[in-house]
Length: 111
Image (cartoon, rainbow, N blue to C red; front, side):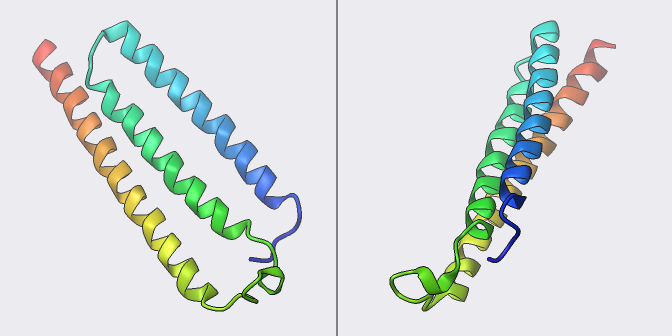
């Protein structure tokens, strides 16, 4: 996909900075509370990062005409990888929902 040269680098840097901050906050909460349910949130971050990596790999592809096959079947290939990224994202969202539900449930029982 054609993008300005530094776009993918900016996306990677921005995503990494936000994700590192989010993971640090969740790890701090996990250590403070000693509640193993925070691992669901970390699983969400991991799966979400895999999905983003797949997506960034797709949009960061060089000009299709430079490929050995000349870009044949590229739209089908892109659709497949975007679909895989979407499935990984959906799994990450389920992990997030389970984590939030379990953390909230534990707080309710402790109160």
